[in-house]
Length: 308
Image 1: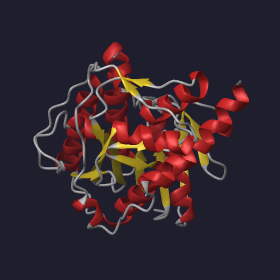
Image 2: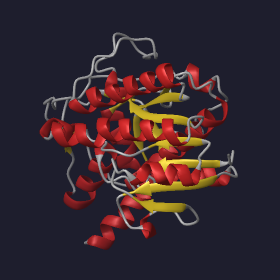
Image 3: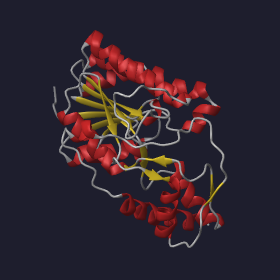
Image 4: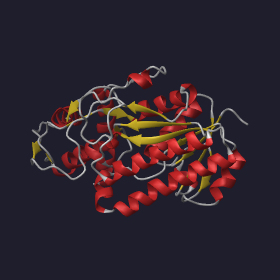
């Protein structure tokens, strides 16, 4: 087995691309799959166009014989999961089962990381939330991520497939055209106004995509892979009002954000991650929210200006 090949389902996505680049930087070979044409995936990887679940997945894994797998495939939208739970389920649970079963048969020693979400916690009992707190999802997305975690338990306990689950908090970075950071940029730069859901006192734990990629590579290289869970965030709680003000400053816009007081279905109130478990492996966040938002503001400004 080539001990330096990582398989990345969903490699052409926002996180998948960055994860591939991080592993390449660390000297790994990368094999990946996604539903898009190969040019949309990072250059220099072994790429296969597949829409999972697909029987061809087994053949590709047998051919590649990966030492590690980082499962990025699937949807990542709470609102879309609420409006279309069937599609969210299909892109999450059957896909995850098909991947784990193919790995069990074709590469049974492959260290497999499942990307889960803080959405499995719902509204935590206390902050910062630790991995041993009860799960109580508020959305189909959260429930389906939790089902994926249960599948990891199944394949580790019954078939000895090495797995680890990483619960990602609020990811952001250049290239992500959804969620609150992008929403703020788009509304401010296209309409010159900013009105958001909620009260502004809701909070999240924001983590830059490059820090996510670094953490996942660290998990692959150092975790015990006994179906354990890891929170992945910055460890810092930021209110949406504070986020908006910092981002407005990065955009160079003098504007006071407004909030409509509404609560969207599936949205939790407050999040902040206890990241003790992942930092014990040697990971530490390296990108501050202020510097990360400046890069997003510059990217969004360039993209939205070119479209106008």
